[in-house]
Length: 431
Image (cartoon, rainbow, N blue to C red):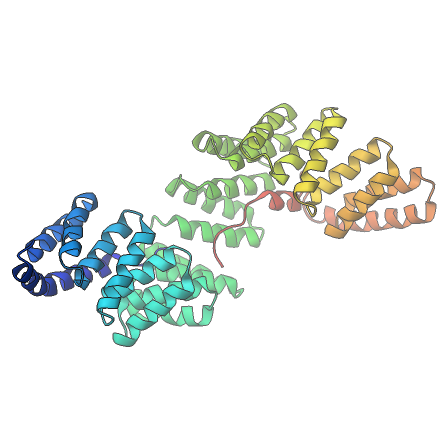
């Protein structure tokens, strides 16, 4: 979430220079202590140069000498904020506001901090206070729009983000968010128009390329989606989700070789991330390379032992390699980790049918059917179990249902199955 803070810092800095020179000088004269104005002026120079570590002790000397100096608290808040010490920064911003409630810069910066810390409702209240004092304030208008977006108050967010003040402040980001709002409302063409405007202003914008890819994927236009995922991943290689979604649509296109390359690149870049190895396993399974799939899934479980997804996939792979006892153990672990994990339940039921444990299989498969009623394979396995148990009428019903659902499935995609690939993908960011 790219809340605007840079210009707010300039406002804060200019306010400090204007006021603390007077108050600091009086404090120095009265106390015979530090030259407050000189310390703050030097701290501001260091702040502008990005030398936060060097600036901090200077401002702390002012705070110690003149605890009532609101500007010093505000400036210390900025320094701590930029150094990633959010809790301490919040204390300083609030101290500044207690001393001078009408101050806008510490209030605006406090709002940015709260938003960044996942407290959008509190952030919105601070931005609203800034706007009451200074209507049309560009940073506050833009930031309030982002906070309301996070709160899913889309009508209000759209009104703010489309305002001249917000567009003037950060047009590319505003258009990006407006596109997300349009997409959330089901207005795909409008969303695409906003995103194209954003790209016209900022060509290198991975979030927008990712958003376009997501919209194309929703429309099952997988070739186009792959192109935009590829751009997003190239522009921001540090985002694992971009590579994962790219690999996912490549699997939907049955391009498992390329998908495996993408996931292997991700695993090499994120060697300690379980999800990266998990998706190597998924792609290798799609290629039928169960040895490579097993190795990758075992690595994923080393990193994240309670992953129901990895347990379920490894259970399937191990079962296909003829190790039924271990497969059952893994699949039962997956069900314990997530009772509503469809593939864990389905593959466990399938394994039990293969092991001629029909009553146990039926219980598990009925659970799978409750999770996903439209899965043809579940009903086929139930048909097999019921047939072996001699329950002909029930078996006939399951066979009829299987045939109906299978015809519907064939009208969609073949191979690994679109639903299964979609299940494997992580949830994207956004509304």
